[in-house]
Length: 325
Ligand SMILES: Cc1ncc(C[n+]2csc(CCOP(=O)(O)OP(=O)(O)O)c2C)c(N)n1
Ligand SMILES: [Mg+2]
Image 1 (cartoon, rainbow, N blue to C red):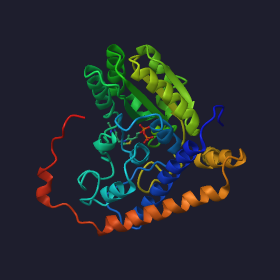
Image 2: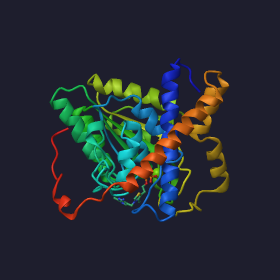
Image 3: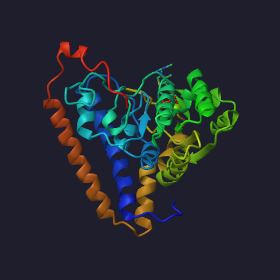
């Protein structure tokens, strides 16, 4: 899996973050299906290597923007399990004080602009943040995460064009999970890859194995280094797979059985743990210990979130404006 040498600490942190996302999402799924958690859900199981690999290449003061499927990005960027679980329960201890909910996860203190549920709506925000960084001569970068479906929106093309003209430090990360809701990407994209679309805007476009966190990290690092160095935007297409339904109770019957079976074999956490243990770098027991610590951390967060108070109606009139990022 890896050609370069990474420290054990780095590799275990990648593993820990991917498992944190998986366990968080699995717990949320059951809380939701049991009718304990309000709202709606769009889950990230299967795509963990994308968020974790990209965010491993970022600094705390770099910013990310996300979509209707934001939990993986938020955890990878450093938001806490506690503030996120509380947000999903609509409680004042949540990262948006319970006023954002499932599709507006974010916290500027950790460099995450609140997520936008309008498909393609977050690209202009990332491009604008990157323009601000450039104008203020700050060595920060902005990342816009999106799905394959978002690349057919007008805002995708406008944002890439402007980012290219202005040469701003933004990275467009497309998580190609082969579907936009139930629509296969092959039905709505004529080119062989989505990365090809970058060439028309004269920016680099690469397609990478999005289920290999180290390959994702390498591609992101290269793009981040270029952006920080004033060399402008990059488009990174990450090939991955959503191993859960699109939202809520979607059984994803449109995903063919053999495709699902193959995706199960190729899922990032299974692959990465096999890589870590088979290379002799890590013992099974070390990974199990991490898994258990995360389980406890999530259970505590659920208890804390349930015990926390709800916002008051008059709180709706607060937090309408923020200081510039
Ligand atoms: C502009 C707009 N159109 C439609 C929707 C409804 N919708 C929410 S998610 C989604 C599919 C998005 O697919 P993709 O961009 O590939 O992201 P994925 O769900 O696969 O992560 C759609 C159509 C929306 N939120 N915004
Ligand atoms: Mg998709």
